[in-house]
Length: 256
Image (cartoon, rainbow, N blue to C red):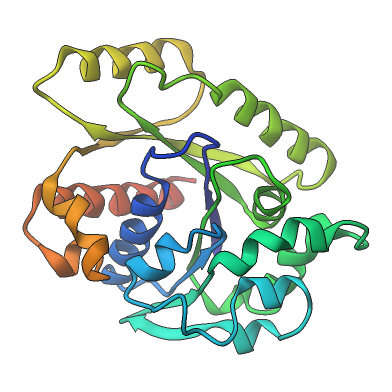
């Protein structure tokens, strides 16, 4: 049975897509079979894994509308051990099209149930909103990983996300848990980054990963080349950090 991890935070620009891409790639590098699902209409995870989001025939949009099967929408081996369900701007119309559909919160889960045993990990990149797309991801997930940028407003909106997760636990998915919080865009040269980490640790009653993702030029460049950081610059600080995070994720499973 695979672990299905939703990477979620309704704040934009906190490193969700970067984390989804690079955690997936590092888990695959460790020999795990991984499916990455791009649930963001911006399609950043799709293009960040080297897939032209404008030229794919079948995407998550067609899957949610029941036009294709889950097998038809999976792009296999975009990297060794890593498959992808892509997305593009068409997905932005799904919110409206799902209105009135029966059990609309469970559409993604019902599709994934057919393939869940094929993978060790399914990593879902959620949009920066608490939308029906995010609800679908949380209903399908076993846990939620929350990236938090090391900035002044880091905790803003986080309580709303946790409240949404609790509502989903209560009404749609009692098996859902909070995987943990991972700090991103950490700048060791600033006191602010240190203060944010300390503040979150004091105020958040959640698991916090030891690995902290640094602000890193190579990490920022990698998506424009359609490559995870471990392909673009395997020895960079960003690559090493995401390898450590992947090992932590794996070790947390082993400890359970």
